[in-house]
Image 1: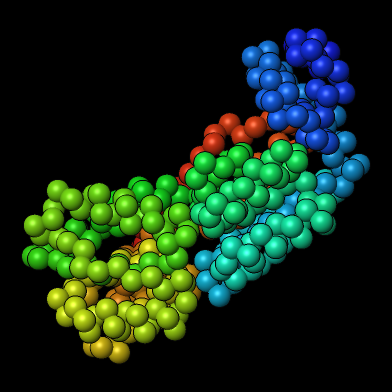
Image 2: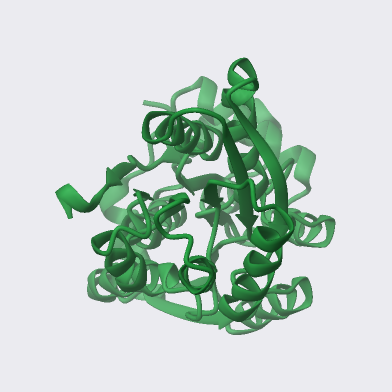
Amino acid sequence: MATIKEIAALAGVSRGTVDRVLNHRGSVNPATAEKIEKIARELDYKPNVAGLVLAAQKKRLKLGVILFSPENPFYVDVLAGVNDKAEELAGYNCTVLIKQISFGVEEQLRAMDELVAEEAGGIALAPYNDERIRRRINQLYHQGIPVVTLNTDIENSRRIAYVGSNYARSGATAAGLLQLMTHGKVNVGIVTGSSNILCHTERIAGFTETLKPHRDSISITDIVEVHDDEIESYEKTTRLLSAHPEINALYFTAGGVYGGCRSVKALGLQDKIRIVAYDLVPTTRELVKKGVIAAVICQQPKVQGSKPLSLLFTYLTTGGLPEKEHNYVAVDIRIRENL
């Protein structure tokens, strides 16, 4: 079995430098750190897990979590997963610090800085797909503070892993559901969240790609952005349906489902329009029961809350990178008959 001494000799550095890199302590030149990590992988270096976990207990590790506002009920279930894992990790003297923020890049950057100031050793967050967030994640990585993204990812960043659904595939699933649940000419309206959230745009991409071969029978009429806000969703869905009376299907890619469905009911269109949405929260469950929503795609929110903390704890205590970069959760489909 490879040792820190052997890695240090091959890298031409001190054992202390290797220890800092492999155990994420202190600052090391990025090029040197990358060289050490490469040698450790090639030698199949395995740390003393029991010893490292014991050490973690002694130093009282802190992990941070940044979630969007509980105004989106999906994040209530994600938070439940976070709290379950936090209770488990407390047995290892690991504290989980939670920040819930409104949508906004500045709010997310501020929450990241607050967690660093509170000495969080790693951070899990649902990121804005924004260059400023990307730069901050990369900075944190070089500071020895790993980031795991949850529910939505961020392109070209140094985050160590992602936990959530495969957005493109879930968008394709939504397209397949609408094809099964409709007949004749289908005109789809899409109601989406912020275009700065990668999962929203990727769901639409998967949806539209799947429908390309069927464009003669099913087409996208228009797309409106509602930022997970129920009032905004009600108003914009009303305008969408009034401007395009030919719409007979709606695809909700994010929050705002309740507001949009209220609009459908207020216009008396619940028997005409087939609706596919995400997440079995109390409001969508009730709307499925009443037949307003035809199908809901569920994405294991509690796992999305708990698994990022498991990955961070393992990484910080053992130095082991997650086995998979993309940790996709299974999705299931709920209709009125299987609630």
